[in-house]
Image (cartoon, rainbow, N blue to C red; front, side, top):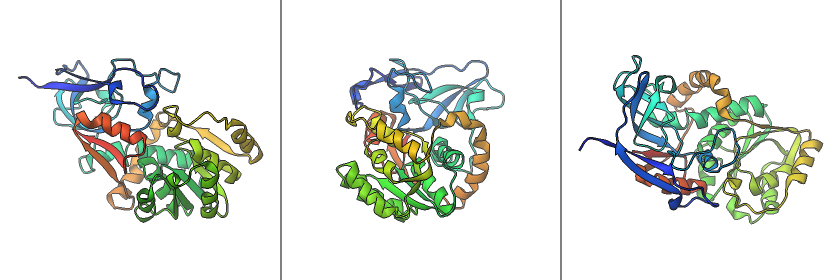
Length: 338
């Protein structure tokens, strides 16, 4: 039989946490690239929390996925058919392939990847997550030596990079992570000064007490990955003129964090502490990606920046890996090896 391609689609919109029935699986003949396009055989696929938001039919920074559309995501693989002069067959490229074994990409959308660098680094430490950390900390965190930074989801690809960059800049870094093992990794592998297991605290009040002990001088930068009880715990501990780069709110992606109205407390703290709260979407900053690679890639190659991956084998297992990711079941960057 001629080679075929497979893809995973959005079969229906999730009600709360996604379940396998929300996804579809399709197989059909390989597509042909058109003029200025390439056909890529995907070798690795990225799984990221933002994908959950794209499954909802709500207004956001990008259009929601349509029912039947391929699940969105970045991949890396080799060109197997080309109608683009600058991308011959065999070229290693990364781009928005989606959850699929093959993808047709416009040549302008396919970034040639340096063969001297690990393939999967394009999806994590040197890809969108790493670039997000580097950009958000510089532009919105504005770190100064001697300050204290707190970050939840601290052992994920964004959190781990933020922590290492902040530590290198002379800050006290405090991780919030799910489980004793992730807290150990935060300190022993990524170099955080302290780590707090949010699962060991039933509510925001208990978590706040632990944070206060770990942050005796208050919190100057809170990197917002999560929302939920972590945000509620952090806000009263923020110092005057603190900064909060808002990168994600994974606790609310599936609408399962309860219905307590925290807005009055949060908004009053923003006012009285004169906080800078900046939501940012990394795609708005993509012109800075070459500068990020020039600065950070040598540090990754030299072992100055540590990164972990959680690799799942096989596209058929991507759904289960994604559902686990949303509940904190991964350790490091979630990647699917096709």
